[in-house]
Length: 637
Image (tube, rainbow, N blue to C red; front, side, top):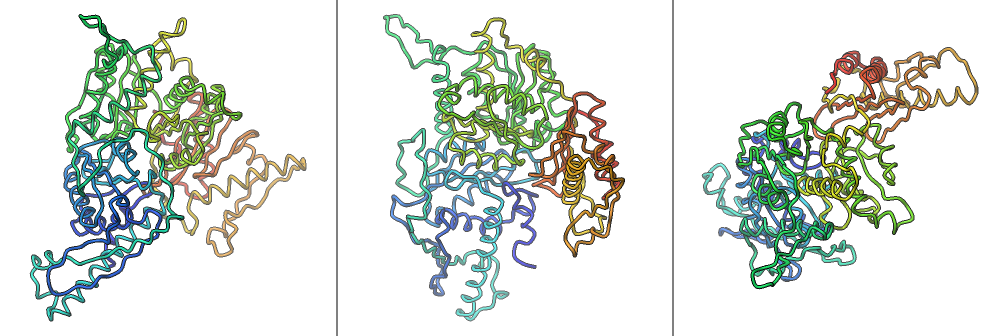
């Protein structure tokens, strides 16, 4: 079996994540050297070569850059068991390979990103985010950018290359010493370190220019490792967020007069007159949320705010059904203004209103888009084009109309917060906000990091609620009343369905469904143009001659086509199949992170929802009857 074949499944669309059993010592070591290769060659102008060795014990090293050229990598970890050990092992290897490492300790993923921005935009955090406790994972940045799917697969290939190179050098060393591998005890093999040299070809023309950090930390690094205290890590992050709100709401700055008549502008500004309940779900936000929200709000009630990698109350995923029950009950009991829930690494946000009801991510996305457009009107004035708001393909059919009414241009996107961040970073500031159904929300108004920081998003919402109440006649901080004025949504959750396994075809169910919908759309358009009343048309699910599904011909009448895709139906195929009808929408796509389909359906009423599910079931039935039955059986939230 090839090296690390079992680990291939860990390298997913957005990060490295999977079962704890696959994070072996050998794998972590190979991964560490692959990261070292990556950070020594951010422009991919680097090659690994073997170095000479003798029979003595030799330590790995890299050809060092000058101090000004050394890459600086920040490293942190979440609350899971062994995350800290993995982080330390990765840090040790990076240091051995000549990189500068700054140890951040227990942090959220957005805090890792914040600290990476203070230096060169390189960072690693050992986290499995919202996954179950037996899952481990790793996220990282290179030059301020999250990795693409291709980047992640390239890292896997580098891991294999590292292991092959090391094994080859081991064997050559053993041959030179006259020993055989089986004659060495494991302890002896473990002490043999193989020298690797990474040759850096400094082609400055190909290096991507680094953006200047907004919050520069004046702390030059003289050694190869520096560990910041928890207080340092938290204080710098908190201070940067405080500064954002001082600039946004300068009227809240309240200098205090001392006994001798002197004033101080260093004291905290006026706290928000809100009672807030926060559920950290025993995740990484547990150590930062209490002190940060206490700085902004009059009264904060914390739930599950002790870091605990066993997650005794359940998976640290606020989007799971019934996962917010404790938060909802606490909001009602304390008569709080709002309930806030974070996932395991602090990049997902869910909200409960003052009536104890969960705010759907669709409505929350709209509110946060309204926040940024209200607080950053310069975007509307300085550009001749309207600011853009990005939302993923699983979001409600009401969003485009609502976002347009705010003066923005709604843009639908593939699912994936990392994909959204890349689009934002390449939009020259035109995309000012992005959000997706899973609770990731990203601000891009030059005030803070371009990342899905759930704590920051929650604070932006709280300040907007307070300002909205203070500055407008008859305005309110009553979130339930604000949501009540938005269109009703009757929807299913983002439901996982197993991929069909008995299809006699080399086309995926999503490919077949896509071709069918495109054909129906073309058929209806052609019929309208020609005023044709043809009874039936033969339909082949695939145009490829060798495709086994092309033997299936489906007789479809114009009337049937119009019933499945009524006039005015909008079709999107950028990520699976999404159909927007007059009174609802549906989407079926293949998951990026598991061997499943994901499906979501929504309507303006229960009847509309059921009709849309029935239409999708009819579209899928020719290809898989079981899938069609599963679609109809999905219950609303």
